[in-house]
Amino acid sequence: MKVFDGTNVNYIIIGEGKEWVIFLHGWGGSIESFKYVAENLKLGKKCLLIDFPPFGKSTEPKTIWGVKEYADALKEILDREKIEKFDIISHSFGGRVAIYFSSVYTNMVNKLVLIDSAGLKPKKSLKKRIKICFYKLAKRFGFYFNFGSQDYLALSPHMKKCFVKIVNEDLKSYAKTIKAETLIIFGEKDKDTPLYLAKKLNKLIASSKLIVLKNAGHYAYLDNFYEFKPIVENFIGG
Image 1 (spheres, rainbow, N blue to C red):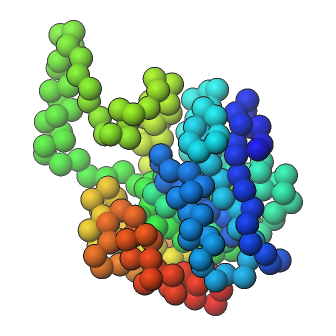
Image 2 (image 1 turned 120 degrees about the vertical axis):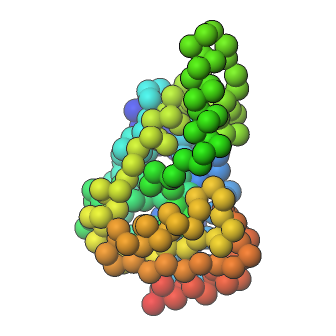
């Protein structure tokens, strides 16, 4: 457990080896989201898995955190463990942190895996634009509704502020400056981070390759693990 900005940040280390792989889970997940993967991938490296606050055994942030604060918390853990060079395997929200971190700390990240990664502003459908207009109009006249995704509605009032800050951050400029060799893996049927965002990331990150896993959704690494496994083993280990 590491205290950062008054927040307890839980993490574990598993496996053996001289080199490191950092696993960054998605929003609402925890160490358990990647533990099975870390234990079953044959990478020959030590694995560090983190509970992003307030999930798992980590506590709720004391201040309003955005992507930068999550990346800063990760950096403090890495400094504590004296980890200077590593690979990253990230999913969804973890991809946001990975994109920012890989851009800011370019010399620390060796290889980067982005699975169904968030970080770019998605297109708003007509249905969503109408819903937003309705909500704003209702709010103006004093009516309030539970508006937002299930991820948002499940949060505490404080974490809702963090969530809004995070989803409104467009990491396009950070993606452009990533130097690490990058593997982008998306599920063919991902509805949370649609495939067009994967293609956009692929264009933004110079040294990147896109692989689409068939019959997989937003959790492509679990939906199609036995196709995912050799791809990542070859990329990280090869």
